[in-house]
Image (cartoon, rainbow, N blue to C red; front, side, top):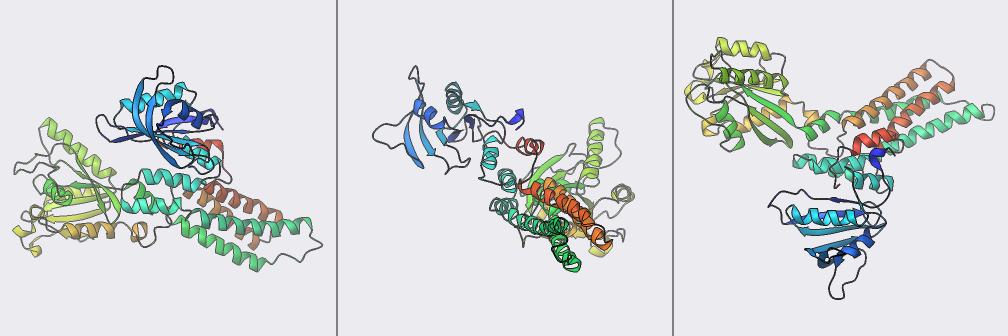
Length: 460
């Protein structure tokens, strides 16, 4: 392993989020051959409590030299191999806050443990065969899940729902490779290769790879979410729309144009998809320097958003100002929100025929929000956010490896069709096998591991 992951010795880290004066429990975790010995030097368990695996002991943490009391705590013991890392693991469950856990961590380091690198506990679980690489990445996805659907997808990955089909595909490629190499080595002793059967087998593997690869965009949506910008002229009801949608008073609402001068953000979940909604300053020409900055930020937010909600006032209708905004946003995924529809008849509101998705709302009365959410789900392709099958949702690294496997398999098809020598088939098949192995970690480089685990939090 590279220096960024020195995996020897006993490691220790704070395994819970620490917030000053908040949180009832803070956990310090240790893993390694010296974990039990260090725990015994620090933890005093009164009475006849038994130090054995998968027990929780009650007691006190004291400084080993001065015997000064540090905290009243619980000690959780998980001895190898029945632990997360398949090493001896102990956890000090201390009082929450900052001071207690930091003091306990410092005592662990003074007794010979070293501070864990980001993701090193999970890295050890991978290196010791406790998890494969897809499961390890699912751990990070579960910790960072922004919606219940994202959490379910991560749990499916943690249970091996992605690793299993990838291993099966790799095994089939290995079987095909064995058949080809046997005929290269023992050409005179074996029947010729059944090329039609080979083509069918490769076609089946390729179809499954393509199917799994199609979940990449859905996985990206579940992990990073959808960025939605509410834009429009001043006083069309953008802030009211955000407040009604988020069921809170996130944005200030007045009759005075230019009230919103900066981006107001709200985090929502729509159909299992995390959504970051940005209420922007009303777009108009203005001499006010502060409002002008807000208008520029509005345009920038709209250009970088995944979806734009162009909001207009039904009582005013489609004006030259809306046309100018629409012209600037024409290449962006867009939903037209006709707000204040209670102040005008629906037929009176005109808009360009090129706008496909139109929703009518009365934001001040919380009307039309459900229809808006449905329109958002329809605008984003259904295949990306289908909740019927949560088993597969690959990430960017996995998608890149699968793409390489797909290209290699397509090259195998072309090689068979051109009746080139068997050596060419074996080269391309090996490329597909290596790419599939990178997904589960059966074939992986140190630099890839560094990249993956460096994104984890330190205590995981």
